[in-house]
Length: 309
Image 1 (cartoon, rainbow, N blue to C red):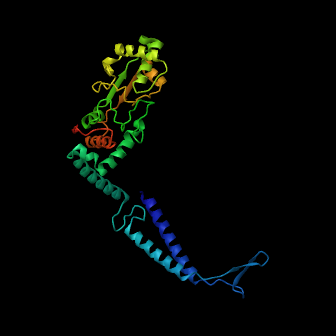
Image 2 (image 1 turned 45 degrees about the horizontal axis):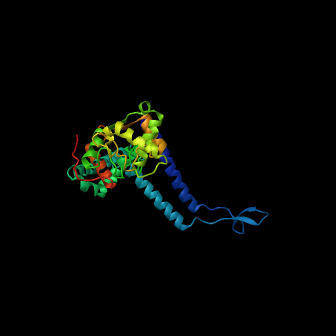
Image 3 (image 1 turned 180 degrees about the horizontal axis):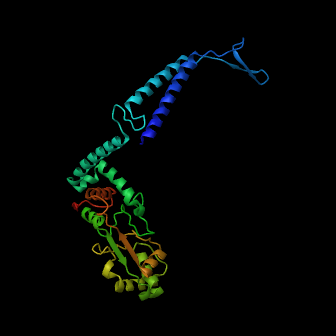
């Protein structure tokens, strides 16, 4: 702050302080002329209302004096005169810096705890899970939803249903967060034709225990499935975690399980990308997010996620 603005603020504060002090003591002593009836003589509503005169109540004067004294002490303790510092040496920048240092210390303690604690215990630690929930909402909720229920419009999987493309143990979840995933479902529309797409879709539809009203399409779809799809999804349609090929029998759908959605997946294919978070988040934060996913109840803790720098 320049010397001019510092001087301007000092003058402004001083003048206001003197004016308020003067008005406080003047109002307590001034004598207001009154009529014989004790009013000012001002009347309204044809004499029905008259303006009375009363002295300031004692409690109001005492409270005002106390506040004036407190304000005066504040002027000496804190930087209230422009760029001039108070006797305490307090500054807003200093307070912010101290808050940052306290937060860094707490974060360092939390990170040390996260690095040295088994993943199963982290998943049961309320402090870790609460902190990880903030990380999840900031970084993951846009795709997977605030409650981790997924979004079939973009193929973001449900993280709490126990169905996993690449496996639901701690190490695999941790690896997905660190390095990301990229899944491709090829388009079969041109090779199968429109009827072939409907046949395979009918077969896949029934894999979840549902009934499609055209058994002939289901039978034909099974034959086409065995010829075209088993390499990725397996002969029993249980999926392949090594490839990220989903289980088609568990009623967990990346892009929706309605017939038209299944047909679209077969006809046009799908491309799903899980970004890698190792370049954005600290290794300890990724461990906390892994613990958060485990805490949802849909994963297992049979393997221990290691720290990836």
